[in-house]
Length: 206
Image (cartoon, rainbow, N blue to C red; front, side, top):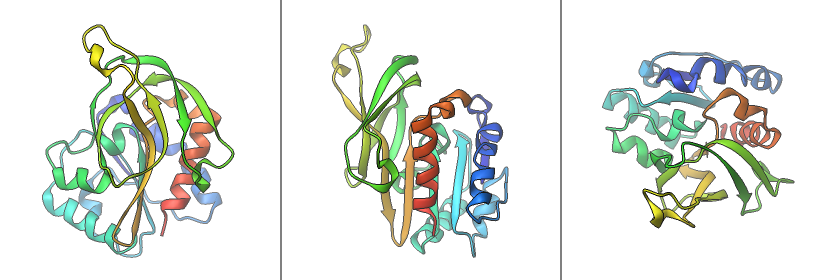
């Protein structure tokens, strides 16, 4: 687990929620507050990242990309994975999406499952009250769930825009999992959110 960046996404507290689950599934879990960890990923099956905004070095991202290409899984949620290292487009190429805005701030919205996949098996939809991300996304993503934006008085043209909310993708031999829900701790109290993230971590893992 690599965590840090903006404290508003409670990176330590949020990632701590998933340590017992990973240990129950046989993982040895190491936590780090620095992307220096990306320089040595030999033997790592999964990187769970929760670093919102923040800064890193190009060589750290290159090492991460090489590890994923070789089979290491990469996973995360919300700004901890798709609003990280804004200046590094190579990083966004890996994740397949970049946060642009949350026009409605905190709002009620529905997430609809749109694909058959083990990560979303048995789930058709769920409702949340949290940030609804507007993203720029990669067309090669395998989108598992979407959310539709309502109109906004300042941006009426976004009405009806369908945004990916959960997706997977590959990077070489590695698997990448993204869930855009997860701004605050009680987002993980929604059973479907928690289930999707837990399944996504295992799916991505080498």
